[in-house]
Every structure is written in structure tokens, then in C-alpha cells.
Image (tube, rainbow, N blue to C red):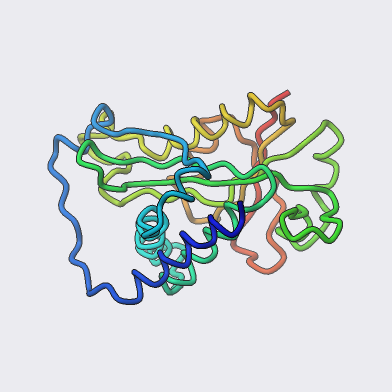
Length: 231
């Protein structure tokens, strides 16, 4: 399966390299209503059939926009992001959901995968220590399997804000969908990492029941980890 999925990601990278500059998309107010947004899982079968790499190209373009915003201020090139998404989706027990408007425009996605106490040399298996840089969270494995939410990306125009707050909740809906799919596979808990100044994201995670662990990333000290128990 890896070769066929990788082929889709390579095509996504190539198509991005040759696409021209894109203007910022404007979305009709109707499409900004949550009732007009479809949240759905991304299956490997779809990626195998996506020979033009459209799905991952959409994900890479939006990720570049969002990661370039404060407080992240990252400057990743889109082909690098697309490649990284491809690698993450081939991790052990990877899961992904995306959000699209009624007209098919991509406005958000989230993905994650199972993490382990020890990777055992398997490139598809990632240990929590590799992500955090230390073993401070090893005790979380005492209750069972753990799932790591690697990415949550939402278009700036589809986040909760101002007078239309009740109509927009794409990030929350994506996260809830991912958590419910993980819960069905009897994981013991969910781990994620976010920026200390990502106020909206931290508020969302607290609302969904995550607890701040106050364990900081060893390489990115301005980011810490959160945990949601599913037991």
C-alpha cells in the first residue's frame, strides 16, 4: 500500500511545484455555516485513487498558510509539508479527517497516529520520546495504547470568531471526529502538543476535556503537551 499512497503524494508535490501564485480564496457567507461543511475521514483507498495528488496538495497549501501565522511563524515550503503529511499518514494506525465546503473547497484537516513507548526500529512506529525529546510522559502508557494528534489546521475564515461564532466550529468538529474514531479502537488516551500562545487552540482542547501536562517540548520550549483520558 505504501507505494501507491506515496505515488499520490509525489504527484501532489509535483503539481505544487508547477502551480502559479494563488490569490486568497473568498468564501460566501453561506459556506461559512457549519451546516454547509462536510467533516469526513480520509481513507487510504482514496489516496491510492488520487493520482493527481489533489487532496494532499490542498492540505499542503492550507498548512503553509496556517503555520505561517502567529504564534507559529513557521516558513515551511509547501512541497516539504506535503511530503511530511504523506509520511505521517503512513504511520502505524494513522487516522485523518478533513473539512470541505458544499462546493468542495478544503477548509481544514486533522491527522494523527498511534505512538509507542519504544519504536523498535520500525519507521512506521513513532515513540512518544521521539516527539517530546524526553521520557517524562512514559507513565501515560500504563493504562494502555496512546494516540497522538499531530496536526489540526483550519482556514482562518472558518474559525470561531465575532458575531458568527455559533456558526463556525470546524476545528472542534474535526477534533471530535478524530477522538471518536480513536475511542472506538479502545485507545487509553490521546496526546497532543500546542503552542503556549495558541490561546484559541488551548481553549478548544480544554473544552474537549484535555488536561495540560506542563511537559514542554525539549526542542521547542514554547510548546507543551496535553492529554485526554479515554478510560
